[in-house]
Image 1 (cartoon, rainbow, N blue to C red):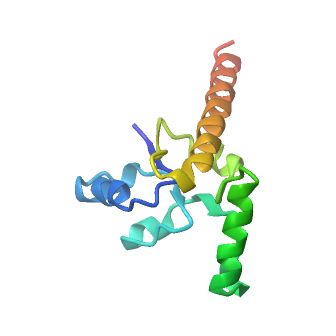
Image 2 (image 1 turned 180 degrees about the vertical axis):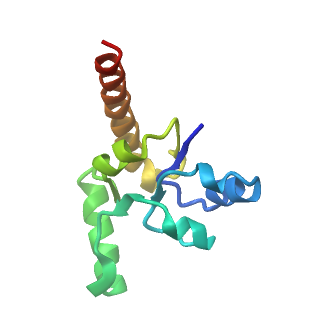
Length: 126
């Protein structure tokens, strides 16, 4: 079974996979995954919607507020990377209110991935 660790700012999910010796099963991570070292070697499937490298804390806060006010998520999903990762399981979270719109994006991307995967399998078996 192949796992994709997606869109959870709770590092405990990813960390538990590594603690259980399942790190080699992780096929995709978020841009924030930097521990353990092996996680940095995985394909990045989820990135921040805000390039904060050139922004002040105030500017980041303003941009976050704008995205949330517009009903947009704080993260973007690289659907091509998701398809290449071909996960069997996607771990995500929808409990934190400020991340909920992003959770919905993950659910939609997973549904598109499921349809893509089903159509790919059906064309291969013909």
